[in-house]
Length: 443
Ligand code: PHE
Image (cartoon, rainbow, N blue to C red; front, side, top):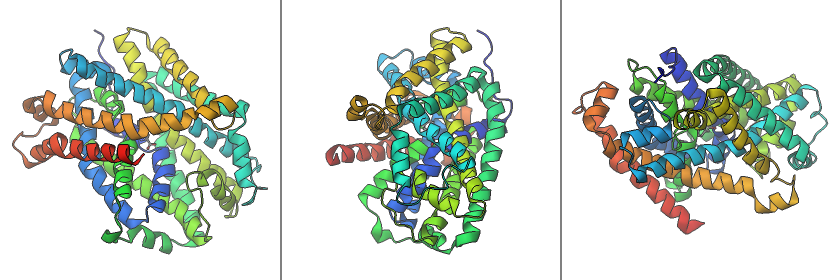
């Protein structure tokens, strides 16, 4: 077997994982679910979920990858000695990645259109009454929807086609620029409207306000935001050299992902609180009301363009990580060349994505089937958490403690190792199971 390509440094590996983790989930979803669930109390629950469920499973996935040096499917097959039940978990991971990328790329494509139009000044005539219509007619325009989805999948595939080298090159540009752009927009919004209300909201902790719904939402989001539950981190971990520390990497990824999510709030909330914006449809606010308010800031057009550009960058570093696991499967399991594997995986996900692109009004028939909503619902609420618990259980019970301790370079009697193993064995699976049962009875 040819030697597997590895990341060139620990920093690039961490940057690639942070790139995967920081995406639409941080900049779009986190601010709106935090807003809907009342601020500080939700943030606290979310932090706990990241700490006791997200990060332990993240570490487990990276360990499975590095130990087996395979893509998610073959890693599980190899480490379970070809057990056919475990193979199903590998297949589940592939399905989830496939499904998420097909609709994620459509939404990511929207940011490209908004970026271009903001830059050209084409959004400046919109006001609060027309912005919703503009968004509605955009998402129901079949040509535009397919075009931007295609652009996004093409960019993703071109990067993945070059393998770890291509991903590293892209990440080296995307992540630092993303960091700078967020700070720029954040400084503009904070200097215009102040950060007082935002900070009060984010730190307003009132334990009596915790609801079951908020806990479930926080747990679900912990999976999505850390990119765990579908094998991305198995594949990324499989390219990580043995000498580097997985524990440190996990810590960095968890901390940086959270910082990006909080910065997104600091970028968006000052506008919401400062303008006393009436938030109705919080999910689509990013493409409606916010685009109008951003135009009112100093250098409005440009700030608005920068805002959508940074979301596009965050999304691209995540779509790469959604395509790589499927591509690696075709390379390692089906013996395809990387070029062919990228074409097959990128092409088939693009095809499914076309249905998502047409499901917001672009085609009457497809919109009735609500393909995009269903795919989002099934993957984010079901297969991702299910994949997550099963991978936690896999790492906890199938891989021996000796092997795990050796991989982590810690003693298996240390507190750290024991607590992690306990979280994987009992705590994370139980909590996730509760979430899923609750969802069954509440849907
Ligand atoms: N973590 C990404 C986000 O927050 C989404 C993602 C999920 C990426 C699963 C890869 C794998 O947007």
